[in-house]
Image (tube, rainbow, N blue to C red):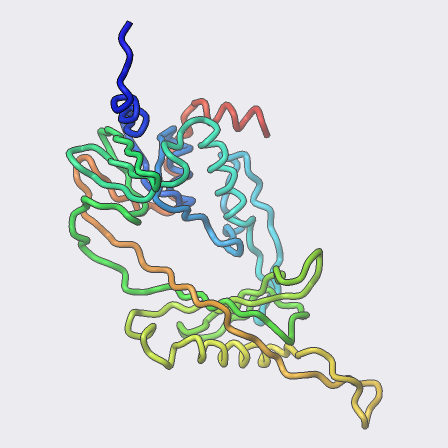
Length: 309
């Protein structure tokens, strides 16, 4: 009987070789849906989950995931808007079942990905290396990915989220407020995480769609985003906290002005676009197209889903 030396044992533990026909790179909802429906393993260098406020359109049929697209009515400054279930709930479900069925090559600590000689080298934060051999690589996300060709085109529009803490004016009926233009064209109201328990106190997110030059321009800064947010809230009739009764008419109340503070601005960078090759395919297919054009494979992941729901 032969035994491995300490250095050989260390090398085998820290370096792993695996092989698959196809590998999905990315963890967006589209990537996980493609992985689940086609029974293909995936790996990612970041968790690209949807925001908690993102919802499906009401007409999207999610029965293929045994997931009900519940309809909710959202109050806006224009009319009542019907929307579907939160995308994050389905993302969490898919991520759980993909891990449970062994289709997640490495779920945590992935620091970088590199394509080299038809091998996807997965480096972890604790200096381990996984060599994943493949016949086809379906790339949904190029984050921290090396060895790619130069991007062919790039969408120059950035989605910008300004997260505001509402200090006065937290209680109102609105879920969304819309406005014209690309700068703070939508306000999204959500239950404040700064208040414990069930409540109807809301903070707000301002959404913009800007190019790089606009992001660097003070006119589109977080300072002016705050001013426009205040303006939109006041235009919608939102008032601050009560400030006692009106001296001239005791049946009426006075109110403080609406007040918001800017704790954080988040800029979502556009995805690079690449030319696909015979072995590396850059997938930008929409979620609806993926579920409409994919026949569900009868596999371990779908068996677990059916037996546990």
